[in-house]
Length: 470
Image (cartoon, rainbow, N blue to C red; front, side, top):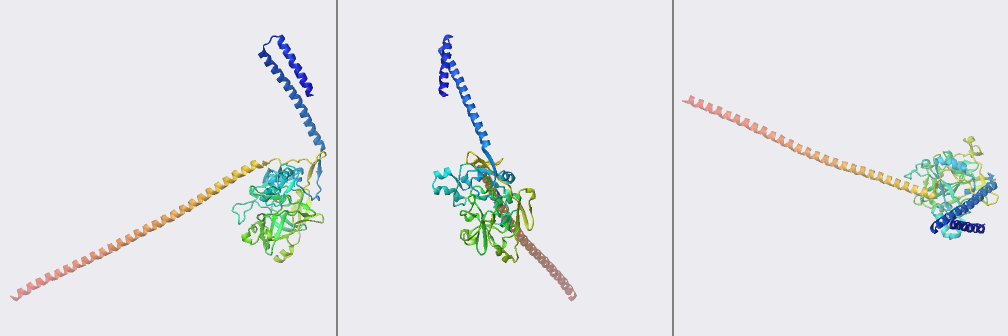
């Protein structure tokens, strides 16, 4: 094909050259026309190949569509894998959770999973670096480098806890533990929290906080349990935790991802009021030194969240704790919660496969943010929140300073008033003294007057006496 085009191109150029010579066109004009002709021919060649390529691509897409099949996943298929994150249709979750948070597109490494490419290019220690940061001590491989989608809960779903200044959403705290025929069931107060409590896994990112990773297998609660004589503790299972041989291959989880509660409060309805972030200095020993308790297992082809023995709480509370029956339905309108029975929604999931290829990527959520873009926005929000917090602190300090100044001024005013009062007192005392002196002087005057009168009268009498004597 290329040889034929080159040969024809040379022939056409020669024909143009001959025609130009016959017409007596100058060399410069000849060169311009020759270049124009070559340019036109190149455009024609490019168009030909582009059309061929587009046609080939369209055929490939059509072939792909013909070879793609949709497979309904059996609800008893408990063998989840990393591949599910890109091949399973999670539209049900995408639509249901979007109003209550935001979907973020991330690399598998961001949630503790490693691609084959990363594994081949890095050492074992390097592979664990991200996993260590998010509390997973064991890396897990994903078969491709496709991006995956995770859900970040809205701050509106967070509840205020006693030891936390700013509300933060924390899984498996806003709700109540209920004894069921499938083990310990976490009953959440809202439908969206019910969904993320019974499907998928959680990862605690140092930059983004708690992120929910979709999963297709239902469980009463995807958590890891630990306990000692006084306290009970649990943590959300990370994405690398899958069922294998009827038990979960749970990796080591960092102590900071656990919450802890005194056993006597374990069955309280507003559990977050009694739970705390785990703190070694408060509770004496690390969670890792607490006794591990069996968590997720498969019993009679049903997933059970075993957890602590119910007899412990019956002894503490002095009553029998009857199990609630769990009934699953595929129609959301049938969901209801009664004292002895929970009718819960368990959607049907589908996986996309390609007949000629190993796998095909399923569609993601309609609305999502790319991780880098989202991370920048969150960093800006964090800066704004810090500035707002600093501003509030400054305002608080200013008010405190103003209060102290007013207090100091009041002290000075009181001192001035006391001085005035003292001066007034002294002046009053002086006036009283002066009045006393005046009165005394007046009295003396009166006395003198009386004495003078007496003297005058004496003199008169003396005069009379002298007259009589003569």
